[in-house]
Amino acid sequence: MMGFLTTLVLAGTALIIVFFLGVIVLTGIRHFRSGPDGRISSDETDEARMIQEIYRGLEKLDARVDNLESILMRKNEEGGPQ
Image (cartoon, rainbow, N blue to C red):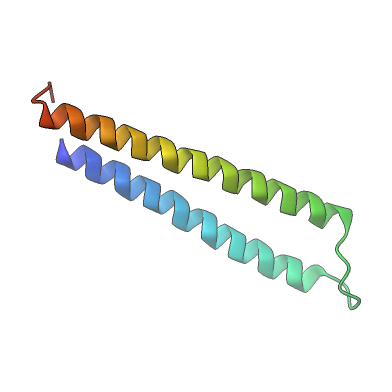
């Protein structure tokens, strides 16, 4: 049972790390693609909106993983089936 919980925690952590690495890479690309005047095109605005949606989705996923972990921990403490 603890191996499963450990796997869930590691998977959640991996998702968060991958997300932040993606944000860093996309920010770097955006920085190098912007023109000399620093304006952001509508494509870049769409990308920023998409990144924000991904971030919100990952926050929801993190909350769901936390809830699942707490449910599993309660069942484990109550001596439920493993």
